[in-house]
Image (tube, rainbow, N blue to C red; front, side, top):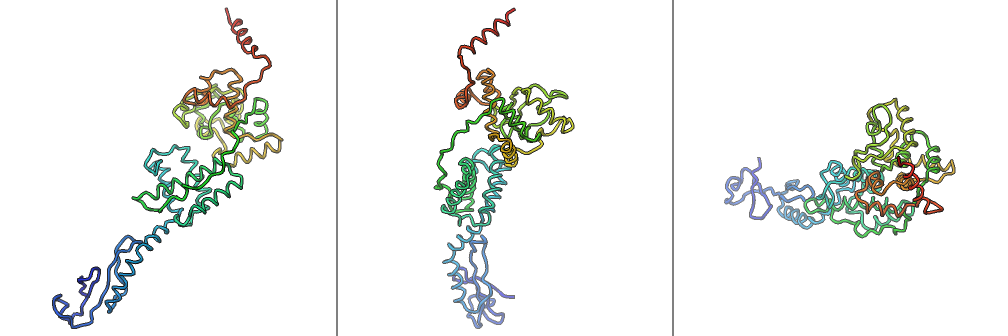
Amino acid sequence: MANWRKTSMPNVWVAHQARCPAFDDEDARCRCTPSWRGRRWNQAKRDSEWQKPVTKDRSEVLSWLAAGKKGAEHVRERASAGRTFESIGDEWIAGVAAGRIGRRKGRGKPYTSSTVRDYERSYRNFLRPEFGPMPADDIGEVEWQMWVDYLSREGLSRSRITTHVAVASAIYAWAIVPSRQLATQNPLRLVELPPNDEKPRLRVAFAPEAEQLLEALSPKDAVPYAIAFYAGLRRAEIDRLEWPEVLDGKRVGSRLLVTRAKSEAGRERRPPIAEPLRGILLEAWLRQGQPLTGAVLETSVMSGKLAARATAAWTAADLQRITLHECRHTYASLLMAAGYTLKELMEFMGHADLQMVNRYVKLLPQPGEEDLSQRLSDYLRRAAEARP
């Protein structure tokens, strides 16, 4: 068995033959041809390693050690490049979904559940298919800018492109933290987004058009749009709506109960169920076998498939398409036209303060009337008729 021991030269080890006087006594004069080997730090493996194979030439050990020292920086770069965008992104998205990774380079508050779902769709449907196998540090500013420009040419909205860039930037910001060093820089910092020249979403559909749009859809697809038209729920709120929040005993109630909303102000709100919505919900309840629990929707609103089917149906019926968020605009407009107060509008829409409602209302078409005094006259007439 070889008797390896350190020499005066750092990281160089020697083993004398058994018959050599230096085998047992390191101060004795060597009378053999000893074996040599070196030991150095492997930057890629983050561990020490022995030289292989053992050599009879001490100079080979010195050359091996020198090569390792000179190539340490190159080894570190290769180790960093070895982490693909996909391997880093998978780790980040899993941590975000579990609440272990928050905002601000992973150290801030956890993301909201709706943001997590948006980020998961963006990462799995756009970012990972495009950049997954590539080393994260090999994807530079030029590659990211070319991709953003391509998405813009393909007609993707600025808001969606912004989401994709935000996800990628958050992944890099988390990865380059000194305690991780999974990447060396964030190439998204200087990427230019498309110009913010998109028109505000002012599209609303007044009562007759809303009815036509719903009639053009299949019964299952009409349900989420009807909830947005006549109750003003957001997409995620529609997706989470369950039958106990709709039913009053064993019938469709007069008001919805929104228990899981984007903000604290939106939770536990009870928007009224208008007659058209009550009929559509009743049909869905009967179609599902009159369940007392479970989800109201029979189709997903969290992918683009619903919008694609709806757009095709409306195009065939020669109707102008509308988004779920624009249906929410419509709901606010219908409340205004029906004479609801700003405070009621704030409550039913799930806004935190009247200032937000005032800003929102300015974007909506006002109910048309030929004589402005007619509104006051109608109110005074109703008040007089109500007197005993």
